[in-house]
Amino acid sequence: MSPVVALVMGSKSDLKKVVPAEEMLGRMGIKVITAVISAHRQPDKLREFVESALSQGAEVFIAAAGKAAHLPGVVASLTTLPVIGLPISSGDLGGLDALLSIVQMPNGIPVATVAIDGAQNAALLACSILALKYEDVAEALKGYRKELAEA
Image 1 (tube, rainbow, N blue to C red):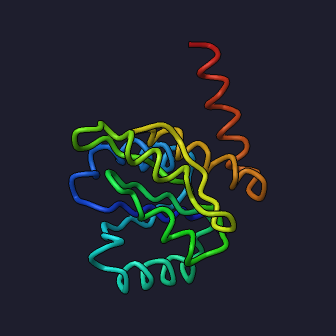
Image 2: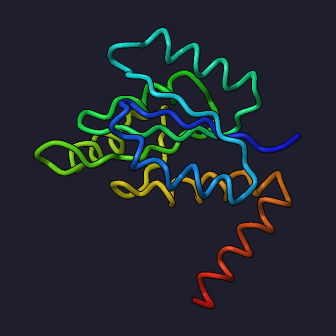
């Protein structure tokens, strides 16, 4: 069984900022299930996506959102698996609103959070989680870090 990460974003406009996560996960040999779903406008579709991703073997979720950024918290409310919130820069506040929304999840529904537009780090955090179970991911992550050190 190969590792799977579910990656969901709140808007098509987020796609270009999420691509580095897809690329890094692919580099690490991780299958990615990707969707664009608004937590506010399509709550039933989001629930279906989470259930479908779980049935396809997803073990970590990355949820990218800007502005009010409810998407990561809603995903976390639908699963007990790790959810990584990826704040997206948009609007007048440049993503600060999204960052603050994601890090302020209520007790009991945690969401890990990376920097604004930190898609690559969201992917690497997902890899670190999956490395606990998958030796090939652990080795790929070690190799990547070695490359960083040499560069």
